[in-house]
Length: 421
Image (cartoon, rainbow, N blue to C red):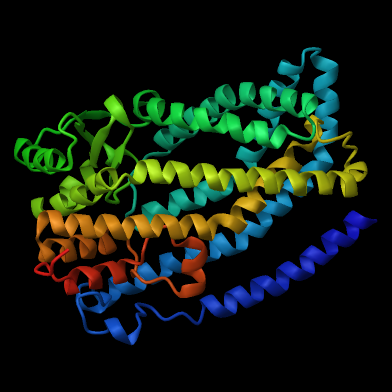
């Protein structure tokens, strides 16, 4: 009866919520920027056609609607899966005697179910990306990437999940602290191994062929104190037509990577600015600061998840047949609590990332001393990703992992290269 009231209440809340979100989003105007930016190089109307602006606006609305309407449904889905979880747990116990294989079988079925439930959304965005020219990836290639991701998820998560439940059973009051402590070396190990073992499974990485461009990037790397970094080109066009570049790894595994889409779409001067920005993240120690902040946020996510997880089990666990916090049947509830706390904390994480992006922008403009290239690079990026460049404040609060492109263009255009630092 309690769950029935919850579901009815959720439906009523969701309908009201969806109506409010729709009313807000449908009142957004294509190409809107504050008066401060109107008519400047940061205004999309000065470097995009009205057709491009309207197309970008439509895409923005789709992404906004998807985020705000899907997020509550994601949480609800995990609650609904609790009704199925007890039967799956019981089934695993009849098939396997060892806890490792019970967890492996449970997680395999659970992951397959989640994948199938979200498959229509994946296909929708596949269609959308092709319709708007954001991707030319074939369905076979998409299926291959999904297969790799699914396999990696099973292979990597099942042993960790088994260890997690062992810790929960042995240390019912301290498992959250032990879990957080274990996340520190695991995160550092991942930073070493992902560039070498995981990323090449999806894309080809090769030394940058363009020797002139490579020399320009190498000069930037030398000035930043990373002369031994690998400068690589990635066949990003396999999945997307959008521009990207990044610096990944630490120590001897450091890689400066530029997508072939950036080489195709941008001028050499624009690429220099983009790569100076990425190299700036290394020079300003953002990799290490980001790691520290990530671990701090993880601490609060795990601790908050622990408190909420135990509360929900004590209050509602009997309704789902959950025997305690160590019960495998409570996995959807555990994922719900972690997801919910992560969502609540995400604006803090986004703010920290935006701060680093702004600092890397300033580093890049100081290194390249080319305001025109910086401005045109961001204008090219805006058109390439088919965005209008300015997220309204409520949306930016939740989705803004980077500063608004409009603000970044204006910052570059107004930047005084002659001022003393």
